[in-house]
Amino acid sequence: MQQTASSEHAGRRRRPFRLDAETVGLPLPIPFRRPRPLAISFSLLVLFSLMLSGCGRPEEPAFASTAERTAGADSAAVGDSAEVTDSLSIERSDVEPGKKQGLLERLFHRGEEEEEEEEESVPVEVVSVEVRDVFSYLGATAILEPEKSAEILAKVAGEIERILAEEGECVAEGDVLAILDGARPAVALEEAAVRARALKADFERARALHGQDLYSDKDLRDAESEYEQAEARRKAAQLDMDYTHVRAPFSGVIGRRFVDPGQTVAIGSPLFTIVDMEPLLASVHLPEKEALRIAPGQEVSVLPDADRDREFRGRVLRIAPVVDSRTGTVKITCQVKADASALKPGSFVRVRVETDVHENVLVVPKRALVPEGTENYVYRTEGDTAVKVPVMTGYADDLLVEVTEGLDAADRVVTVGQGALKTGARIRVIPDEDEGHAEPESGEKPAR
Image (cartoon, rainbow, N blue to C red; front, side):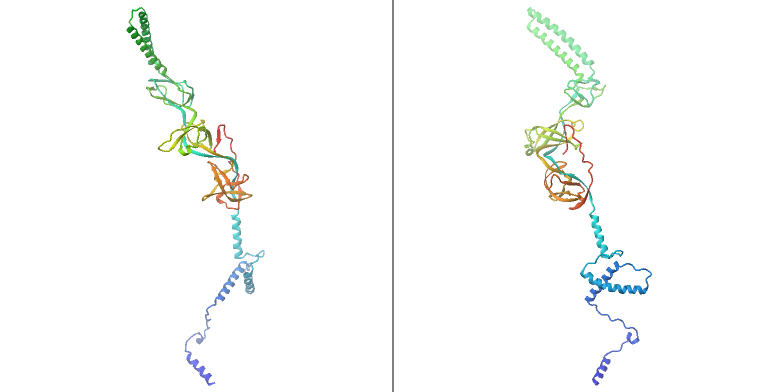
């Protein structure tokens, strides 16, 4: 008993006097304790469950009483505890009809809507795989030249009296193109003719006297020489008179006219240019190694630069026997038939010499290819979807490319809209306005 009182007395002495809330009679503060990790986790889990269930619970009416709200909160607390356990073991079931969806449901539903939007069909253009012949070419550029071309010059001086041919007109060999003033040549011709006739009479008289031994041999030869010179001058005057009529040296087309009526020209002045339109020549220069694969008579394709949708057929006319030492190339001259609408002298053309052909092979338009690195792909249609497939290619030209592996003759491939596609994407085919092709004209083939 004494020890107990001593202990209590010692405890009271060790406790120092301080003025605090308990001494003055104020409410005591709640002592702070460090929360435990398990309690924090459980609190966060309960809070998340309350948020999740609150998003899916119907809204309370604005006029609900305090008691009703208190009862609802109590029931919600009991339900939240059960939902916490259920959410850890199984997924939530679909919300009942008439209730709002929870936060996660709305997020998942939005993701599904986005996927559905992404799966909307992509508009594309498609073509069927075709079977055609594909050629291998050696290509070069050239300028078409006529086989015969000439500039007609004035051979006598004088005034242009008449123009009988215009640019673009076809003329035959010997046709008169223009007439010059012939008054002066006519006078010269008449004077030369009179002189020639007089000397001819002197020569004949000298020859008769020489037969009677009344004329020496020397006098006879002198008379004969004078007559021959006079005759030559007469022929020259006649030639000048003929030159007043300008004639076509060969059949062709008048390319240009340089003079007008009334214009005075000198000897050597240009009057016209004339070209022979059949055939036209295209000279290309190919490397010596490639020229070994070409022979005279081999077919060529000529594509005018002004109209690349048209193609004309020609042939190799001749191959130069020498190699240009400066460039290491060989001149190949090709021949093609002229066309008034596309092929003309001076036209810039692309010449392709056929070196090989693959017959009856599968081809697709070049625009159907989707290159990725060193590989080529196409999108093949399968119903209302597109599948990306790798392909192997062979010979190609400006529009088409040979497919050696990856496609069949019955396949269809996408030519427009590949950029928005992926394997399995839904597609919507748009009709191609250029599906119909006109038949080629005679002597002309559609460009490949």
